[in-house]
Amino acid sequence: MHEITKLPEMRAWSRAERAKGRRIGVVPTMGSLHEGHLRLVDRARDRGDRVVLSLFVNPLQFGPQEDFARYPRNLARDRGLAAQREVDCLFAPDTAAMYAAEPLVRVSPGPLGETFEGAARPGHFAGVLTVVAKLFHIVEPDLAVFGRKDYQQALLVRQMVQDLDFPVEIDVAPTVRELDGLALSSRNAYLDPDQRRAALALSRALRAVEQAWRGGEANPAVLERRGLEVLKTPGVTPEYLAVVSETLQPVKQADARSVVVIAARVGPTRLIDNVVLGEGVANDVSVRGA
Ligand code: AMP
Image (cartoon, rainbow, N blue to C red; front, side, top):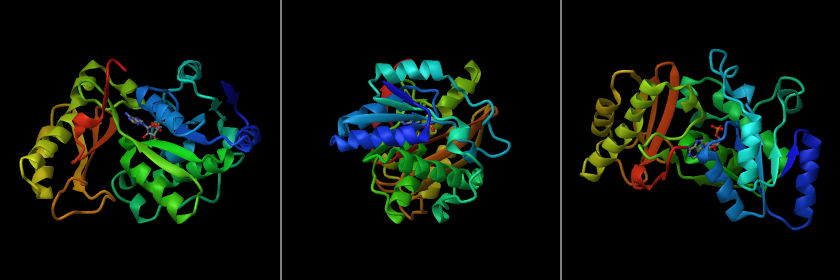
């Protein structure tokens, strides 16, 4: 596995591989790798010849009161996991390499970036799209793989690629969960055992909404009330629970493409999750003890 920290070296590696006719897939992450990230690597490998895994905790996407400083970082462990999963190139630039100075120009996410996560975290999606745009220019991938776990992020990346004509195919992979339903997240490391149990309310609420919908209820307000009943448990503070269209717009009737999006705090930790109604939580990927 090649390990690269410098931008020009990354671009040179990528261009040399492409010159040999190889298709390059990139998996952007903030490190602290778990099985959810590694499944994205598997998909990139299935759809391309070379896999670049990027590890970069992007300061631009964290608000001033958020967890940038304490976000879990473990390069040695990530390196081992990436090598085991046969990543071809680990791209792990430091902040100074990615941002010689704080960028004055940022990618504006537009109205899709102002609701849900965008409303809760002002500037977050501008930070995400800016770093993804930079990464695409540095790696020049044919393909990039994102997780549905961050539904709004994946939607915005697709929109950016479409609106700004990036020559990159975007693939979005299903959410990877623990056997009890908790979606894998680097931030799960913040949860103590009681909070870990309480956090199951998110996937339980998604399942409750899904069940009600399968039972014939299509009114989004009724479905949302049902979800909130389940989400509101001791130790969990709901932020939002909404039944929306695949582009996160209000719907009159929920259908198979509708998405249930959730954000809640468990203690001080903010968690998000979602399900596409027609696919269901049970069709996400479940893994043991991740
Ligand atoms: P992060 O390191 O949390 O920024 O995530 C990097 C990529 O991994 C993003 O595309 C996420 O959507 C994806 N990801 C994170 N958690 C999961 C999960 N549980 N299942 C699938 N993809 C995930």
